[in-house]
Length: 325
Ligand SMILES: Cc1ncc(COP(=O)(O)O)c(C=O)c1O
Image (cartoon, rainbow, N blue to C red; front, side, top):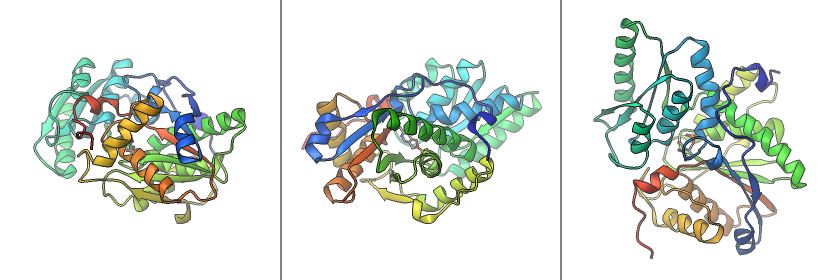
């Protein structure tokens, strides 16, 4: 089997990210609840995409790319972090964003600080966005550039390597703390983080269940299976990819990127109990889904649970929370 060190990687993040117990929430729910602070990863406002971009932009550099293109919604954390990481290595970033949602503030401010070129496509479909990206790449090639394409969320097996790395970090931190995690819970938006955590858990955290909370209604079981199969191939690993390892629940509310009452309540609850910020689009909804599972007895017999905070703070400054009930 290959090791992560066999793959090119640019160390953008400050790792290991902190992992510690949330004392107040643990008391409230009667479980040992821990948090992994990937929101404190040290680039921009933090977030999961930095781990993926370490591998993806290294691959871009190895291929001689001078421009990186990626896609997302107007408030895409992934697009913003691509701009941030690309800036660090002097690579131009072109962000092709769907013209739906919040078109000012939040991550768009950061995109411009990082000097990314932002192009909007007036559509609801990523097919149109990808078609536009093809056109842009063709033009770039004709002008002598070498573009590198990263799909939405950086959710390709090479990007998911970053979350296999995260499970290695968790294994070391869990050993240092003397705690074995029964389950890890994370937000799922395009599937790459979950796939990396789940296949990584299989390799490095035996006996730890990986639970993904979908914040949009994509078929994440299938997406995760496919990405995990790609990871297995990339790593030349023996550990089989099994459907039984995939545990997806949903907490979407009225729709992707539309604030939900329970998501907004979770944002406030975590802020007021632990001082930590989550956002109303990804981590707030994932946390709300996690709280619901705790209340439903889903973790019966499981005592030590880790919530992976995947970032997203930029959305707090673009998407209004619903008023308090
Ligand atoms: C803050 C945040 N958390 C979680 C996710 C989900 O990660 P993934 O796209 O790898 O499923 C995303 C992006 O989609 C995100 O921006």
